[in-house]
Image: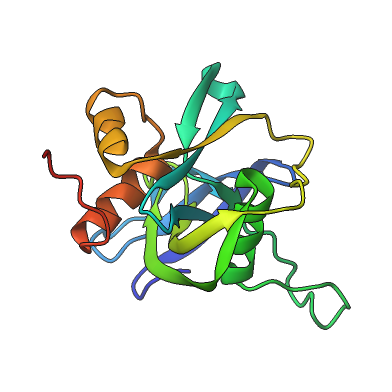
Length: 201
């Protein structure tokens, strides 16, 4: 989505697959007289879910991440797959909320309890210096384990899934055991909204 005063004068595509597109754009900005040239990675938007149990614990998954050659603790998340005009072509279309609940089921094996709620917390840009990717934050509470086993995608390498107390989460952030930007960002948002207290006790 472009804002008033921003115009892409020209664009050259270098690479594209199902997950991303690399382009060099010449962009006219509101503050400059001449267009700027920038290489940009276009990525689908994503959802990031903070699952909270009835007793206030947070569910994290431990996932292998190939680009960094590490396994790290994260909130469940996933890209939003959408087909332009998909509903008209007979494709099932999901809302962002439905995607969030599906990722909660598939990645963590949890679901909202019958009295649960999914709270939208806004969105953020993951790395606006080179990509337009944005992540939509959600708090799901209370959640409970699903009785049926979750069906994970073959591309995912989720090694573990555990419930952590808020104090454990705080300590993991302080000791750099949580290094995932999605997780750090949603924890900051939850704390700022008074939905999670990360103050040292």
